[in-house]
Amino acid sequence: MCGIVGLLVKTTALQERLGELMVPMLIGMSDRGPDSAGMAVFSDPLPEGKRQISLYSGLTDAGASYDWQGLVTALNAALGVAASARVRGNQAVIAFEGGVAPVRQWITGYAPALHLMSAGRSIDLFKDIGTPAEVAERYGFESLRGTHLVGHTRMATESAVTPDRAHPFTAGEDFCLVHNGSLSNPNGIRRMLEPRGIHFDTDNDTEAACRFLEWRLREGDDLPGALQKGFEALDGFYTFLMGTATELALIRDPFACKPAVVAETDDYVAIASEFRSLAHLPGIKHAHVFEPAPEEMYVWKR
Amino acid sequence: METLRFDLAQESLRSVNQRLHGPPESLVGCRVEIHNPDGAHNIAVGLNAPVEVTIHGHAGYYAAGMNQLAHVRIEGSASTGVAENMMSGRVHVAGFASNGAGASAHGGLLVIEGDAGLRCGISLKGGDIVVGGSVGSFSAFMAQAGRMVICGNAGQALGDSLYEAVLYVRGTIASLGADAQIEPMTESDLQAVGDLLNQAGLHHDPQTFKRVASARTLYHWNADADQEY
Image (spheres, rainbow over the protein chains, first blue to last red):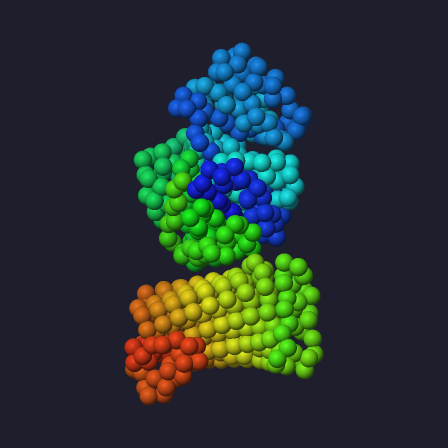
């Protein structure tokens, strides 16, 4: 079992309150996922020539007191990319000029124990082990701002309880995926992708779905096209919620084994595994509440 | 008539359910109002008294499960397993219901005004279900006794491995499950559909429904079928 939450807000006022609205949604799914939690937050993109990466320091010796400023200074000295850091708990978002690949490569050499969680122009990513309330507190989720987000509470069934196996998973740039369910053919997907040069960070089944869909997007499919290929290739039980720089997308397997409910108003679209995570949202009593159908694609644009 | 008013934003669901599990004679003829359900699981489960319960909002899993005698009305939607294993009484959902609505109900009437999710009426054992909208795939799987009236459409594999339950469908059927077949409507079928629609407060012409029942070819093991039915 796991819990899924998502929120896309349509007004500037609600963008300021994104984290505050989300925290009760995430905590509401604690029964479904008490061992880890995570959240990907999307906001207005950096200019074309800039990128940001979310790094996790919890696996280093220093943990939350990791010397991010030291990393930024060394990175700028080595590559001259005008990097800067925003730090929350075990996580830092490093923004810099130029592409992701050279920075990623440099960091792997500089501090191999740092885990790269996301990359792109819009996405910030936080995930860690602990109850949803503990993780929300550790990273100050309440003060997060942005246009849309994807969150997850995990009850692990398919791989160990570690920060890098928590959701959301990311692949490429500005793409993330969370999963409630279990896949029966993740290793087949992996054997198909690895010869194409696609690297996996973990043995988690969800990572296979994430990398498969991002590969399809990179191959030129639009999101509905990639999701259609996902229906054909991915076997098992799933409700997937995905985020891109401009969209949230949801699909459920043909047997609808895992739940989902959506509430839409003029001001927001909110998605959760269960209604109890939506009950506190403003105007919920007059929201259009519905259960997404199995094997249908739901895409909401910001 | 005495009215008991509960607010789940103020008091625990357990205390509310314990009050509703009190001596049945203390609840006879009572009207119970439950406010701010906010999707909580197990609201008004296991009732065993002729009491009228109204849930003002969306209910979580297993609302009014195992119901006996009580009339429970959910003003919003119901999540997985509403009225699961109902024995008698009535459960009415004004909105939609998620998967497994009325699963294994032995008696009573479940009315869902909106759509029902997958596996509605799975293993039905004698209860009646009326759905104002459509039902999802695998509905009435292995349903043994009872009736389902579906005013909208049915998803894949309707009535797979049916026993003696009878299904009435007004709209389209995406596919029939193994051993389910469409049969002519008899006078007693028209009467039954009219009666159930009337109880549900829905208005359709019984003549517009199709009857789906078991062909009974699975009742006896056929070694020559080679698992192909």
